[in-house]
Length: 145
Image 1 (cartoon, one colour):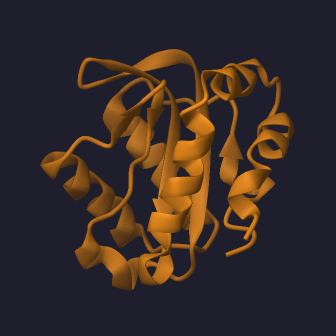
Image 2 (cartoon, one colour):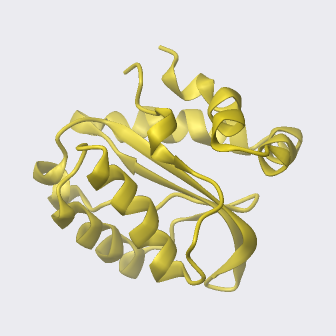
C-alpha cells in the first residue's frame, strides 16, 4: 500500500469555502493524480448525501460510494488544509482528506488517518505545518505497511 500519499496530493492552503467546494477540491487532487476518474468525485457527493464524512478533530474524509469502485485506478489519498474552517454540517473542518482505495484498501487507509487525527497533539502539529512538504513529512505513517 506504499505511496498512497505523495507531495503532489497535498494542498496548503485549500481554496474552498464550503463543504461542496472542499469535496470537489479533495476529489480533483485524486483525479489529477490519476488515481480516480471524474465519476469518483460525483460518488463522493453521493456518499455525503447518505452519511456525513465529518470525523471530528477538524477532519472530514470525503470518499466515494461502494458503487464507484470501478472509477478507482489505484489507492490514493489527497490532503487539503484550510486556513479558515469549513462549515461541514455545523462542524468545523480544517482538513479534507480524500480517500480512494482499491479492493477495500480504503479501510486500511481510513484506519491510519484515524490514528493520526485521534491525537490532538498530532492535529496541532498538522495545523502548525507551514507547507505541503511539512504536512507530507508529518503524514508519512499512511505510506507505511
